Amino acid sequence: MIALDAETGKALWDQAYGDVRAGESATVALVVKNLVIVGSSGGEFGVRGHLDAFDLDTGERVWRTYTVSKPGELRVRDLAR
Image (cartoon, rainbow, N blue to C red; front, side, top):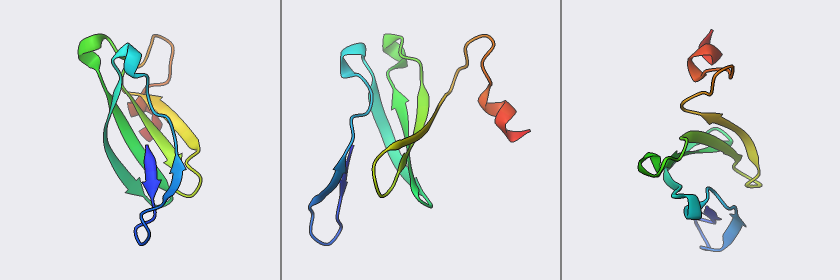
């Protein structure tokens, strides 16, 4: 992922996302307050889907949650409770 300055077009930060060798790729990015949220794709290659949130200013990953939990892991729907 590359964040660009809207006025100058210069790169603000560059952050690797996913592993293309494993068949992982990114879907659409959505900005919510100070986070850039990105989903993954690649389920046809056996990739475990996830959503990641990155700090808008620095590009550092803030959190990751998987769309399908492993046994014993907290499920996304449990976060709403």
